[in-house]
Length: 265
Image (tube, rainbow, N blue to C red; front, top):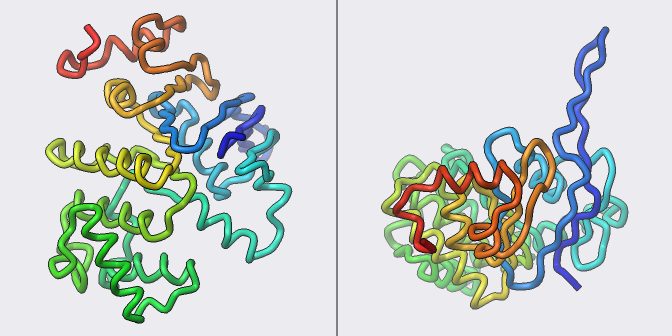
């Protein structure tokens, strides 16, 4: 059974007090993700990628459709706080802006402490201290150079690595990574991508990797989904999508890839 199944997902926004307007942000979207699989959801701004992610994360309620994680409908079957808390352990997010993931009034340690509390562990215990150090080292951060610092004292790449260290602590079954490298300088993007691949290989973590960058999707993915105007218009392996694109929008995305990325040519 896939770790994630999205079935006929639709989200309609309503606006206007006198004249009602309806915007179909996501339309009849269906796809699945297997254990240990990286699936890229590719599309430009406004295509419906982030709306889809927010529904899977239970930040936004769908108009219709189903989302199943390990066979459980996340909107119908999760009813209590404890069930939702358990869901947060299994499905975790890494967001586009590493700066907004932190409260500037607290040391960055706080995001790791919150992860340990989610696991019912005392953040100040010797065991927790050891787990934190192990997680930081796993993502290439030196604990003594990170712990106790405030967000403004770390680079964007360090902040994003710290959020992945949080994933390392929780060990979720599924990560929703929404444009996780788009606000990081090019010199550190490769390291972040390697960390996702490491999670996949070592923890069998599944990843929904949301991006507008087709070249990056080709590099990291086991499967690519092309999203256009709220719909999945094409899907397949990276080789299938690149070598034989069927939809005109997919062809345009491929044409926009810098020559540097085009290792398949």
